[in-house]
Length: 300
Image 1 (cartoon, rainbow, N blue to C red):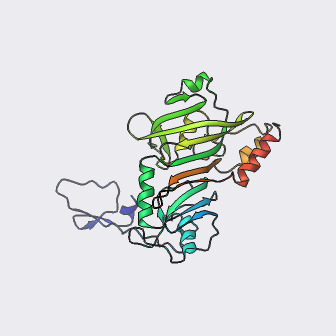
Image 2: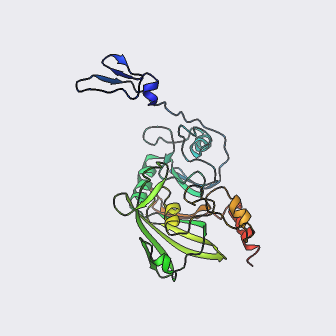
Image 3: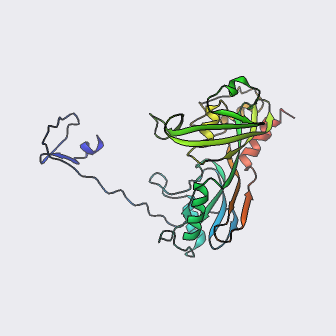
C-alpha cells in the first residue's frame, strides 16, 4: 500500500495509484525498492559497568533501558555505541570490520550480564557455546504468584514438569500469529525452548525466582512464565496488563513498575582462547531491590 502510494509500482509502463487495481496474466509489473539505509554506528561516550575485559572479550552489566544493538528505531544510545567509544579504535575486526561481536542479546528493559567478542576467534568460540547451550545463564525475576510443585493447575499445564522443586517448562516458541513483535508458545513448529525455574523467596503472592536458560530464544523467560500463569511483574507485553490491588503489600509499587522485573544475574562460559572457565554474577539493580523492599515492608 505504502509503495503504491509512493508511486513505486508500475504495471505495463504506467504508475499504479489505485491499490485495488487488478492485474492480468502477461502484465509486466515493475517495483522500485529503495535500498535499506545503512545504520552508521558511531562511538558515544556512555558509561559502562565492566566486570571483565581482555584482548578477546568484554563482560558488561547492562542497565535496564539500554538497547544492545543499533537498529532503525534506536540508532544511538546503544551498548554497541558505548563499546565503540570504550574501545577507542583498539578493536580487532570481527568479520573484517571494526565492530564488537554481539553473540547474544538481552531485551532493552532487562538488566544484567552480557559477553561481547572483541576478536574473530572469540566471536566464533562464544557463538559455538551459545549454539550448543553449554553457556551458564541464570536470571532473577519477580513474578506474580508463587510457583508451587503441589499446585494441580500448574502440574496440569501443557509443557510443565518438575525436577524436585524445580519447575521445568518445555515448549516450542514462534512468532505470534498477529503481533509480530511478540513470541508465543506453540507445540508444533517453532523453536525448542527449555526454562528451569526455582523459587528463591516468596513474599505473599509474589516470588523472587531464578530462571535458568537451557536455550536462549527471544523473550523466552517472559513468554514461558506467562504461559504457566506466573507472568513477570511489570511486563508490558506478556503480563496481560495484570494489576495488583493497590492495598496489597507493595501493590502500588508493582503496578507502577514500568519494565519486566528481569535481571541477567549469572553468566558462565569457557574463555574461547585461554580455555579458562569464567563465571560472573551481577547483583539485583536498585529498581528491583527497591521494589522488593516495598513488597517485604509488609511481609517481614
